[in-house]
Image 1 (cartoon, one colour):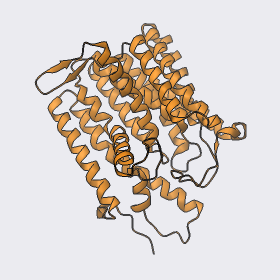
Image 2 (cartoon, one colour):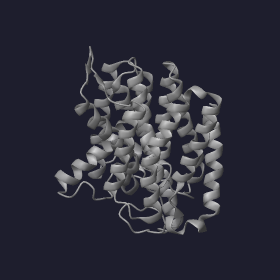
Image 3 (spheres, rainbow, N blue to C red):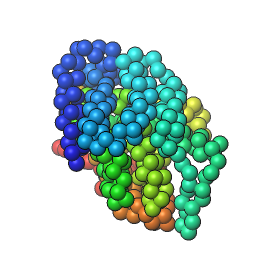
Image 4 (cartoon, rainbow, N blue to C red):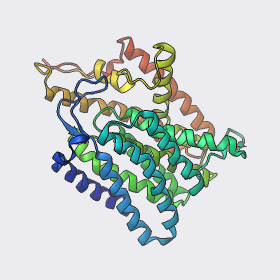
Amino acid sequence: MFSFLVSFVASALLTLLVIKEVRLHGPALDADFHGVQKVHAHTVARIGGLSIFLAVGLSACISVWRVPAMTTWMLSLIACSSCAFIGGIVEDYTGRVSAARRLILTMIAALLGYYLLDARIDRIDWVADAWPLPYIWLTLPLTVLSVAGIANAINIIDGFNGLASVVTICMLLSLGYVALQVNDMFVLVAALMVAGATAGFLIWNYPVGLIFLGDGGAYFIGFMLGELALLLVMRNPQVSTWYAALLLIYPAFETLFSVYRRMFIRGKSPAMPDGIHLHSLIFRRVVQWAVGRKDARALMRRNSLTSPYLWMFSLMAVIPATVFWRYTWVLMLFCCLFIISYVWLYVRIVRFKAPRWMIRHKRN
């Protein structure tokens, strides 16, 4: 818990400093209010990831000072994550780093993790047995694509104030809990550090959106989430590989479903942004109230009311993953249930038949 508190305080103060000195970050201000995925109406700095990264770095230094045995692991993790962070933060400042280049940098970060941290997918658990993956030509690309995919997935769900932040905090706390159960102190400390730093940022991001996570923050916490989940599962055989699959299924399936929707339904490039993610549909078709006119205040309130729907939805995966982390068949069952629930809910909302319990009726 000490690591969480240090990261939280450092991140909260650093984020406040960035907000106060927003004039120094002119190139990193988000003033585009008309993009397909834009849901804000005031100029906001989009470099919240900078304070998160610095807070984690500070907390890592304190952690290795307190527990020198973690020095190599911690420094290697920070070094690997820096590659993913750099691509995102440069994009936040310049707007000139393409999604493909950011993905490549994140893949390089995963490749470094493969060799420096031995973070590799070397088995897949099944109900009665486990399939070993002994060949580097199989484990290397599978590991790199999986970790980079999760980092990109967190960036995709980062569409509303507090959405990606709360989802990743819940996932990181779950990682910390399971790591405590199997006595993996490195993963426990690292997960708490990132969770604390993200929580420190969150208090300024939700509900009013004084600062945005940005690509740097999304890729950084996404990479850390994927890497720590991989390390926890592979370092501790008693933890089912399906724990990581269920824990991360919301952002992962959101990404896969988006690729399918863009390529096979709309006939467009999977990299082409659109405004019909599940969170975008909930924003446009579920959250409703009377405000007199569509002004900035109404947009901000609608933004803040959208995220809790997805927080609750993601907990449908996070909670059973945390409870049943060692029972493969139960985790597989919940993975299937989550996918069915996602598709059912998406189709209902697309057809303007959202469940009644989701609707926020307009005030008179």
